[in-house]
Length: 260
Image (cartoon, rainbow, N blue to C red):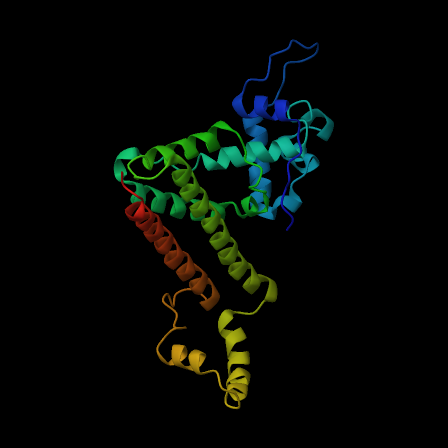
C-alpha cells in the first residue's frame, strides 16, 4: 500500500478542517448534504475496503449524489482523507495532565494501537505531512501538556511523543500484517509452522547455531498468549516490550539530564 501523500489545496483544506469556509449564497436549492455525513460515509468505505476502495465516486454513491455534486462540498480525495484522519483521531479521549507523563504516554500508545486496529487504512496515510486539523492538534496539545512534569527540554518532550507515535504505528503495521497474512494465505499459523518446523529441524541438525538453540531451549521463542495465532501474539508481545523500553528510556533521559 503506497502512502496517501495528500496534495490538496492548503487553504481549502484548512477551511474544511476547521469549519471556516466562507458562506456564499448560490442560486438553486439549498445544499442537501453536510460535510459530516460525507466524511462518515468515506470512513465506512475505507474501513471496509481500505483506501483503494475510496473514491469520490464511491463516496458520492454512498451519500446518494453524483460525483460532480460531491465536489461542491469536498474538492478532492486529498482533502477528504485529511477530514477522515482528523475525525477518527477524536475517537481517542484527550489525556489529562494530572495522570503522570508515563501513564499518559502509555495509555495514548495503547489507544492509538486500537485506533489503527479499527481503521487500518490509517496506515496508508503518510504521517510525514501532518494533518493540521482540530482533532489532531488537540490530541497533540493534550499529550504535550501531560509531559510538562518531565524535567526535559520542550524539544525532548516533543521528540518523545513523536517517537512513541512512530513506534506504535510500526507495531500496528506488524500486527495488521500478521492478521492479513493468515487471511490471504488461507492457512492458519499452526498449519504453516507444522509444515515447516520438521524441515527446519532436519537442516538445523546438520548446522551449528548455538545461540538460537540456547534461546529456544530457554523459552526465548515461547508464545505468551496462546489464544492468538503465533505471529499475532509475537507482534503484540513486541509492542508491549518495546513500549515499556521506550518509556524506560525517557525516564532515564530525565535522570541523566545535567542539573545546574
